[in-house]
Image 1 (cartoon, rainbow, N blue to C red):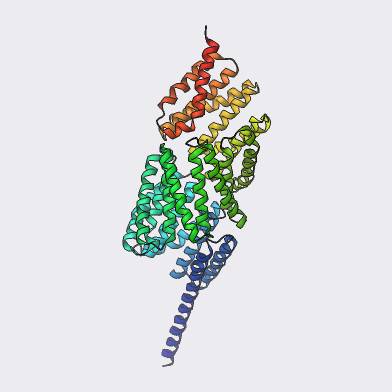
Image 2: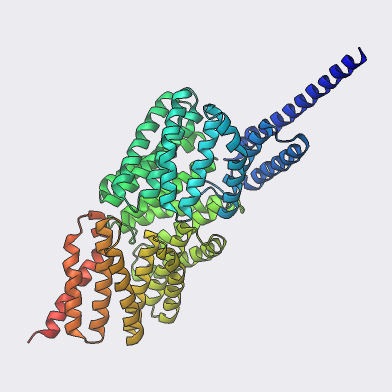
Length: 531
């Protein structure tokens, strides 16, 4: 009898202990998701978000050490690591832009969830969390210039996301996963394969229009539709359909502005609007992208983007994403063509961008998006300085940009390849103008070598042609500066023969000055060498 009572008492104690663990885990889960979710889109919430997640994480780690590897604790711990990874380094929303820390947190989230998911792979809740972790990991791989790896991971997740949507058709969080993956695929392949990016973005739009119809109260679905319209606009820009691209950007801006009317303090909605204004400005007239050549309209759009970015950056000093957005927005604004009287303000915008982006690149040296913004800001600041006759400062900026771009270009990043070529060409022409023959030919030769390597490699044909044509033009310009007219004539002819091979209207628009320069150079050479 006594033994039975002792067993009953022991069982009661175990039951109470298990219930206590369950209650504590439920409390941590509510803190992590209900409280954190209630503030995550508020201005200035980064510090509070980090504190909530870190405190919950520390608490759960202690509970895990006390209670063993309870499945519920593992699950909520995994959720907490995913949350903190997004705060550390989500490339697409407000974060600390700590991509190294984010990757470590995601590895921890994977390790905790993997045994649960393997044991119950048909559980929709575990399936959804696994997809979210792997999609976040793919985003970080893409940011680290591992685009092929990220693409393969996302393509592998698509069937799983589709299955999840069928299992939970009434759950918005489950159903949206497939659209999220399609959008991320479109974002990753847009530089290497614009037609394929357009296919992914069109599928994304179709999925999201269905979600908006099925979940009319979900503001996020409407926001994501605005994102999808912007992604499709970007794909259209890269394929050369600039007017249609501009129209979709306008639609995306309208959709985002409507969302802000109902929730004006939502930082995700505000960031989405600033990104779209910036992209709209790019297609209108940012010179280093395919554009319509409408500089004044482009400047007005970029001013909108800068104003929103300043507001978000000033609202939260710890929101590194907002500060990088400000640097990127200032870069676009400063690079737009200006009359002579606009050069000082353009240079001021670019220098402010450089001051913001330099420390961000040092923190994330493999983050190619940030590096691309910084090298562009340095390149155009150099051009503004060169136009003012300050050639030594200009050369220093070009060389700094080249030092940042070359390592990432050698890893195959298209954006940084373009930056490397531009800096080599700028330096070649600058040194030619100063009469430094050796330096001018050195940089021109490097540009041609890289252009030829790219021409023989993978990637969109028109991009490869334009890079080599620009390099030939730079070398011909240098040769003409030093009166080597026979060589200049031969080299200019090589550039001139390539331009007509380009079919993409957007690339042709971005190269219009080089094409005109080639024609002018050919005419000048003909005059100089006429019998």
